[in-house]
Image (tube, rainbow, N blue to C red; front, top):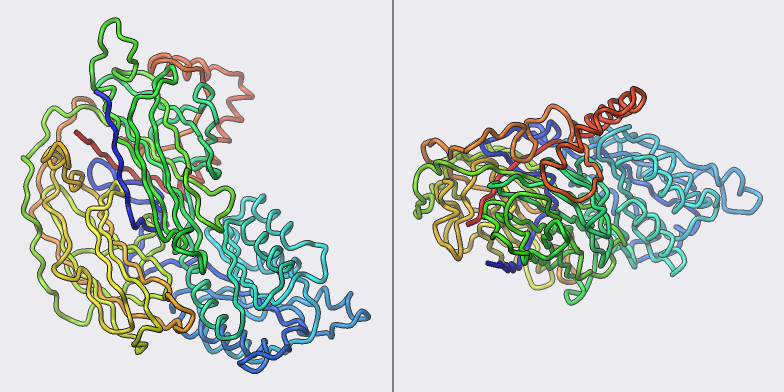
Length: 640
């Protein structure tokens, strides 16, 4: 029978980079954060100190306002973060006679090393605005001071466009991205005109970053800490590179593993998977959105659709639809499908090829598009193949995990910006963090078969009471395949707030048979692995609020004895999602066919000439390095 599933999610968190395996599998090295070792993207602040920054502002001059905004950020940035400071326009005047020297006037006042509040504040205090605006040169020089690998960020504040081009700052941003640098540029226009706004926006979008307007000093003091905090908790999309196609019959074939592609607005893109008879196939896509300020709620929504087609391109009527509101808060939109067509016996003489083993095609469409987002965004793809189960293990259970309020001051942690970089919570206890407005942070808890969790989140007061500082708070609990188990939200006005508002949020004991507990709504706690807790502190609803950090306390209970899991009919080999593979999964383009034909094609390709083999080995080695950096996460999901 055909199946149509529609699910709408009001909140989805910052992008996941992978899933968890059949049993508890290890995450990639950069994702294995402990409470004592949070990771942040090294970030360089670039500050405009050209002569025009001497213009008057409610704070005194625009330069005075910019200094105050930087001090505000430095004072609240995490102690473990790495922050640098670059300025331009401080050593010359802005006359035509001084243009040649003024367009070389870029200084790195502080390298992006572990946060030194005293040194950064002292450097900011000594800035004097006087010269030209060599924005492109400053961007190139700042990028050169950041680490050579890993996520990196630049936050640039300017009150106008580049007055020294070439090099054009937008072209510099494109060059940096083309060099393969994992660098995101966020730009803030400080009382700029349309020309400068267009240039700054182009520079940011060329790297997948954001542009923000700040009309005056008070607005800049609200905006800079928010943008800079988002830059520190930078999200990195990971996976083996793959390029989907606009037609099913030319789509690349992907084996189990994590892949990275791009998706354009309103674009339809196809990928192929060969599914053995009796197996369940998994396919998911995660589209991450940049943080954008001041997007109207009616224009702040995105949708992602997934469809499955058979070997002849016929629709299998397996459709998933996911929607994210408040996309401008930096959410990630994920759509996933557990396809069981290969587990069914094809009918003799039937034209229905959506049953039995063979080649299937997965198609994603970024359908509804919110305002202000880039034309294309990275999309993470996960492919999995799960064998049939001969023994599913213990029966499904209903009781939720009982919550016990922990005692003590709590263990400091620093939540990550995505599922991959989520901070690990080792078990029951109280954990403390600090959040800026406009942030989502993630924590993860390892649950084996038979175990469960319950938790509550406490947002502390920040002294900003009243309706002028209203923002939203939310927490969502996810299973290892990024499905939301439960969610709750409330308004935050600066006073103590607890979520969930009535009782603790949690899971039932993790069992394979939970997916069969109800044919219409199976329980989502059906796979062992990492369970994720997302915590949100929204931005102000008005321009009158001040970005004051908020203390967060997460109280957690983990209970239950470990049980044996399911038994599979065949060995898993490299893992359902390729998590046990020693090398990266290299996607290939082949003509449509069965799984057997695809295997024969792969064997034939392996007999290429010696020169091609050498090239292939080098290519696999390079991609393997990317795989180690990006990581392989795995999961399994079986939906009845």
